[in-house]
Length: 149
Image (tube, rainbow, N blue to C red; front, side, top):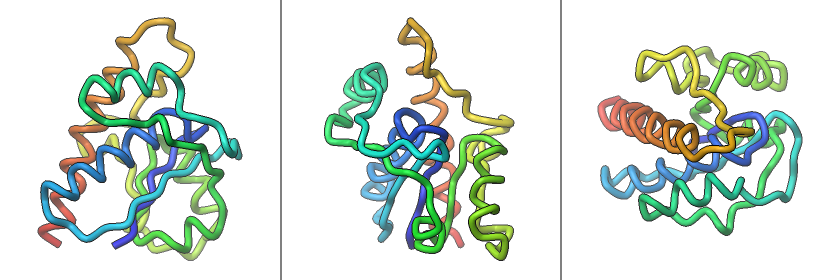
C-alpha cells in the first residue's frame, strides 16, 4: 500500500503525518510506502524549525525532510491520499478527476474534525504541538482501518 500525505507547503503537517505514519506502520507491522507533498508547489525546503522541534520532543527526526510539490505522478503513485483540509482534496482531484472517492481521505474527519489546522505562522510552540498530537491520533486511527480492511 502506498500512502501520500498532503498539506499546503509540505513544511509542517504532511511531513509530520508521514513520519508519524512510518512509526505506526512499524508498530502495526504494515507494509506501506509513505510520501508527502504540498499543494503550494514548494520544492526543496526543510521542515519548519518549530515542526522539527515538536517532532524531536516525541523522538522523530525531521531534519532530513525536503519539501515536494503535489503533482500527477504523486497522485497516481498513491493508493490512499490523506489531506489536511478540503482545499487539498480539491487540488488532488483537479490533478486526477477519475480518482476513486475512497482514495482521498480528509485526515481530520477520522477524529471528528473538519480539518487539521495549520500552525505555520504561530510564534508559539502550542499550535505545533497541537497539530502534531492531532495528527498522531488521526494517523493511528486511519492506519488501523488499513489493518482491518
